[in-house]
Amino acid sequence: MTISLDNPSPLLARHGAVQADAADAGVASHYGDPMREQRLLAEGLAVVDLSHRDVVTVTGPDRLGWLHSMTTQDLTGLEPRQSRETLVLSPKGHVEHALHLVDDGTTTWLSLEPGTAPALVAWLESMRFMLQVEVADVTADWAVLGEPIGTESVEGEPLAWVDPWPGLVGDTVAYGPLEGHPAAGRAWRELLVPRASLEETVGDRPMAGTWAAEALRVAAWRPRLGAETDHRTIPHEVDWLRTAVHLHKGCYRGQETVARVHNLGRPPRRLVFLHLDGSGHVLPDAGAALVHDGREVGRLTSVARHHEDGPVALAVVKRSVPTDVDLVVGGVSAAQTVVVTG
Image (cartoon, rainbow, N blue to C red; front, side, top):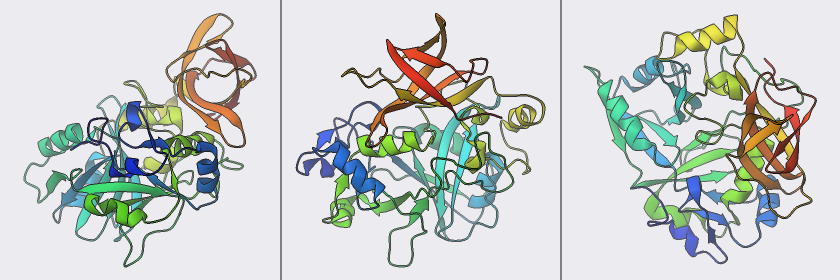
């Protein structure tokens, strides 16, 4: 089951809820006051309905070693309730799946972008061979809630995936700044709860919609699959090595590209953060072309209105674009801040 416009979250019955569209269809974009919701979320007080995300489980004694061998992060020795972010790459090193992974001691839980579970499950099933693993899409029975907390869940709490961004996880490297990163100190985790208990789990806590969550994600320069990525994206372009790629683990699909670009070259594109001219009432849409000196040099990937910074965006541009120039998108001036420098 996929939460969608035709099968929305029960939390959309909350007062003031306005349904999101596109990738976040099926949950609330906001509950009537998106700026207030954003401030509550930034203060650590609100919870976000992410029940449109897919959930996959992997069981069996070989599960962690098997996933370790096929994805980008080191998953060996993972203790119960510990989290990892790991990627599935194509043979040419392009990002196909981003897995929010947490193990409870008997089951590995994967939270995924909406609608991506069927393709992932089909690929995992094709890679089982003789190993003792079982893969299941449990989206129909399990849901995700986001909250601004940065600690592992404890006994008596729902299992939680803790977002490592922007820290360096394992033997890896950052393609963006190590000091002064805007997401320093950021706290975020995803709770895995039975879908039937979704409303009970939220209780009377303040709700924030995806509008608020996305604005804080954009301000944190945090890449999202399907937004900052396309069929050509390699992890280096969006600074995803820092949390999701171990540079000296065993072979996995796409590893040659990761190693070659890291050791011998530079990524052909780079992520930038943009402050958009907010004097107009309408902002450009994600996917709009970025222009410099009359030439198209990239595309807008995520657009948001931040409660402090105003209209902001993420974009992927050609590496050759000068870092000290403003860009134009849909007639709107966009001042860039360099994210990926390596």
